[in-house]
Image (cartoon, rainbow over all chains, first blue to last red; front, side, top):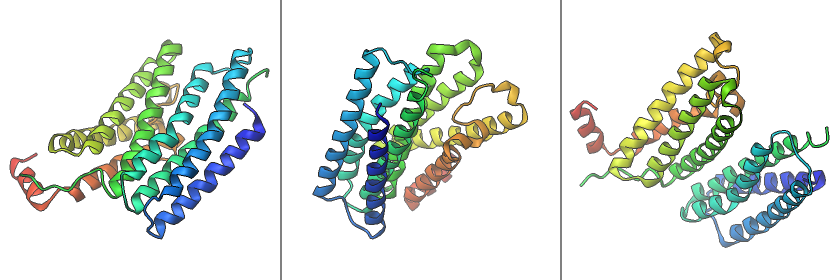
Length: 121
Length: 143
């Protein structure tokens, strides 16, 4: 984990989630640009996960290794699953699904940071 | 032909998404608890596993939206509501029984009380999407 990147990820995910929430409130169905935004954010997630895995392989160990790896997997699944589930619903509720996925991603990344803070402690 | 409305459209879309998040997190958590330190709090961890299964079943039931899956979802949401109320109360009254947290401890306090709200929303949604005839039929059967 890199604290700076994780913080950026939390910020981006929260911003995207807030945007999706606003769009849901004003009644917009998910559009093509949501797919691009999800994919871009997923790329950042992917970079973070790869870095975390490399650091794990290099020997860094958080206290709760199993939980940490579990959260890494969930972090990877959230955006693709959320976006697919959102796109099939052509109404504001589809857009709201993206907001849920983003909120969940924020929680997951914060938990990952938490768990990682035990490394070398 | 039953004409209940689908449970996986409209607001149900969001409900299924939230259920899915809880299904995944509860399963992962229970799996890790049971695999790594089951002996510390077997009751709590078995309840975690039960909660996880109930979330998975409810998610699938609401997402599939067939007449059968409606009933499955109804049962799962009911178990979930009873579970969160009973476990929540027990964990407050006898904290010793639950040395380690489950999703339902303290009425789901550790998860922003979402575990308490979710089954209520699920049951309301199932009722809302049941058509008049379907509801009448079920009432007629005494279900």
